[in-house]
Length: 316
Figure 1 (cartoon, one colour):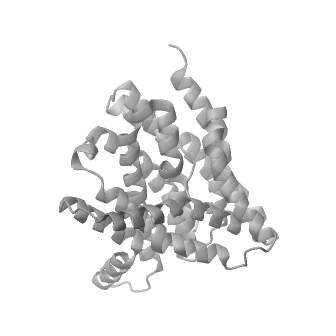
Figure 2 (spheres, rainbow, N blue to C red):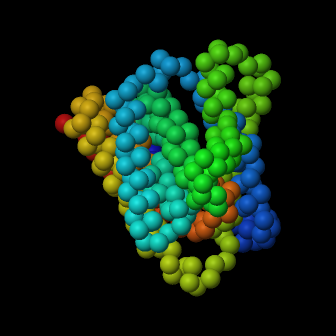
Figure 3 (cartoon, rainbow, N blue to C red):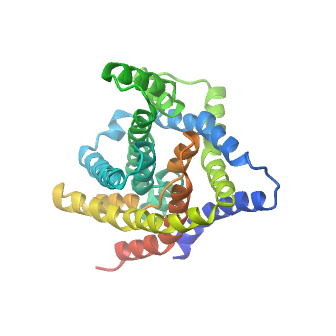
């Protein structure tokens, strides 16, 4: 429990820093939006490019693990998406809700927690999971949001608009450029590497501070009454349903070795990352449910991850 708390404490500290600064009016009402734009246009693209540019095909050649984690994320995403659409939610907002229920925080929490639990053996699976979450799942949500926001309904014109918007989106373009750089075996100059590392390092802390700024904003009584139920449901799906699905696929469908099953389950059980909140803010969609889900799942993961790690390392 203490080890897990050690890893999660900086997450809460950064969220609280943003919350405190907004409530004390040290940062203004546009701070959350502007800081989020910095993350979306500079810091996160640098992280995605750097991750893809330094990934080798040999590292990523684990089809059973890739299938396990992809199906666990996509399965939850699709089920929540359909449920929210059935309840009358707009496609763009339903997509944000769906990614909030299926987007594990592999980058900020996954790497240190994996190293703590499994040592260096966790690095490759966590890298694979991060690529799936930050590139594939993120891209799927962006595609659906773009489709939902387009007014053009002629299929070929709609497709052209969506493709053009996606190519201009830094969160899609940056990993594609990273793949091209890795495929061409491009060696980046040291100054460029340093630039990318500095920007990449700012992605998670700035996103968490931005989340705290957003949570500190005053809301109407109607908003406060409507959010908790949906946020609690999405949190339960994230912390319970997704890791359970990952376990069943890993152990029963693909019969992965024990350590790989444990790593797949642990990565799927991580709380919701800040990606869904950044999408909601970037596309100016309703972000209250998303921000509450991130906060609740991070708080809940203190208990759920501690119990999971205890079970995995229990004798026998």
